[in-house]
Length: 360
Image 1: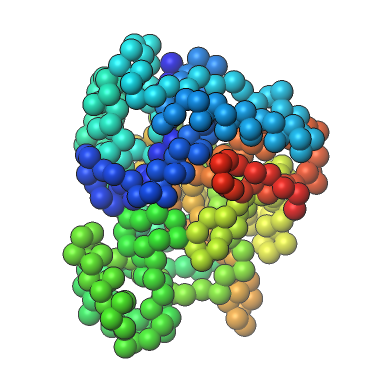
Image 2 (image 1 turned 90 degrees about the vertical axis):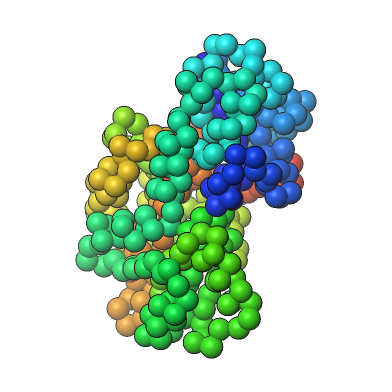
């Protein structure tokens, strides 16, 4: 039996690195409303930890009904066994735990509520995941993924003066906190004369996280990602994730067959080129982290308009060492696609009390 946990506050918990971490309200609300999500990939004998069993059952049933109303086949949608923290100590058959992402807070919560530490990663293992989740992994990945037609660079800075000196030759740059959630912890520095808010944010991140990552600003044309899974030191490819963002925050995923998604991306890059990047990503991931990480992960990428040089691919904007909404979209595409029609495309969005699908 595997215990599944949806802990969407994971990225913020990594930054805090506390055993007793209280998620911001938005994270708690998301966990309450979408706590049923792991039921989509859990096996029949597994259990899913939720805040409220009644709420999870209601929201999961609402989603199943919504899928049916959209005219999609939903007989593949699994049933689910939801539990709360109060029941964890009695679940003696649990032999594995799989959260959205591993951090010190989720491990501590499981131990405090009766899950044996012998089936969990050790504290040092969790710290290894945290260090690998530092955004410097992007700077390490990029040289291993570059090929003709790619661009991208990322640099780590430990003080404001070295960052300012580097920015002078770059103009607008994107500065990122080492650990932060999607759309947060990112600032655009456009002028050499930084304002008070920029100075304050930068100094605060340097004080609490030790460094910042910075990269040139690119003229983005299209966001997408490649999703992977790492097991026993080997990395396998799961599929493409085509998603939308607003002000850097995730807003929705396209649900489609792999062929249809490839066709969308191949409007910008050649298919053979896309496959080359995938193979380079697998090699780089196995080289840098496969011995220290087990579970799902994703690499955010983007198509960039590089002016006179035309469209180029940034092969590694971010590495997410956790499950992503891209993995959820892949799971839903497999569960809900009735005919495996290459033109079957819908958009998944988080709206209110659950996931919603709508026609493109």
